[in-house]
Image (cartoon, rainbow, N blue to C red; front, side):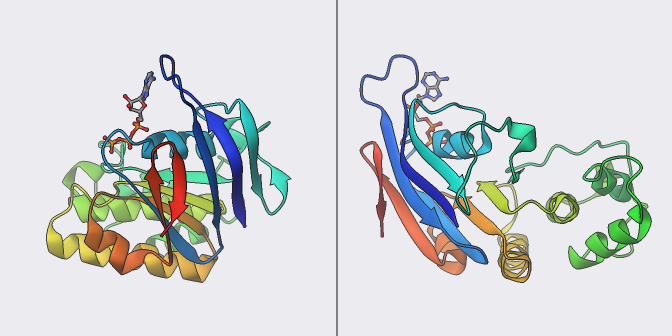
Length: 210
Ligand SMILES: Nc1ncnc2c1ncn2[C@@H]1O[C@H](COP(=O)(O)OP(=O)(O)OP(=O)(O)O)[C@@H](O)[C@H]1O
């Protein structure tokens, strides 16, 4: 379980800090909603380690995450438009999820491509992929990294309606299959309704379960 207990942070100039408490379980998508500027990205940044809290705890299965640098946290981040290396193939972009010299790299990459629904386009340059395929590449990379927590910040916003439904379903299935703890920030109510097993809303400077 990922647990935030009175995790406290204020940006420069904010007199009242955010005080976030929540629980998110493996195999589930937990949504965080709230109006623009309410603190959703701040929450994800605290979990990812880009911001340092001033009080409270952040634990994964009772392990304290706060001392860990972002690159050492068991966390992957998937954004609205994934930054791929456009001149590299889909396969090479996926391979960036693995440290170089990893044994069995080739079969693992092939498996991740297949699971993300990219079989057949591995050799294609990233610049020629559609928005949905690019998100699949990002998910395949996440699969290879195999980190427990997946943070999604408006991941479907750049996609057309049909593609967003397909990619959304893929995220839901991968979360279940791999026991990921997925946190979803989305402005779209239908994303939340389709995916979230548990929901929180930012009200004032705190999180409320919905
Ligand atoms: N580096 C910063 N310095 C000062 N204030 C900041 C900083 N980053 C964010 N803020 C403020 O903190 C508040 C929360 O910002 P945050 O980006 O977390 O909101 P959000 O809910 O993700 O918004 P949106 O939905 O528009 O992305 C906003 O009022 C924002 O202006």
